[in-house]
Image 1 (cartoon, one colour):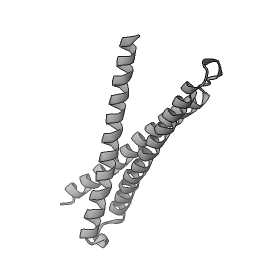
Image 2: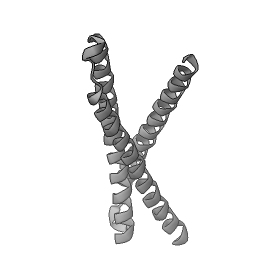
Image 3: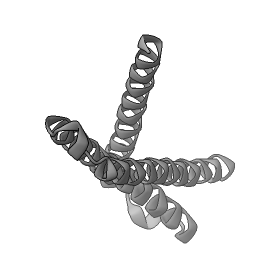
Length: 133
């Protein structure tokens, strides 16, 4: 039993680190975009480049919002678990916890997808810039 708890804790720690990395990358990407776009003349970009930048920026911003929402869901889940543990064992129900777990997993996977879209769009944009110079 003790070994299982240890691995659950390691998995939770790894998930928290991954979430922090995703949030950091998405936040940093968003900040770089604002800095870069305020320092240059946007009319110099082609229509395709503008779309790629808009998709990438949107992907980074959506990833940040999703990551923050996932943190909120996680906090709600732990609060609900604590409330259930306060009840008599015969009155406990884990339905709310299961609902939070499903919602959290969906949000996590969606944030991976939006981050991937942002990185791919940015990579295409940078590849085009390299080829056109």
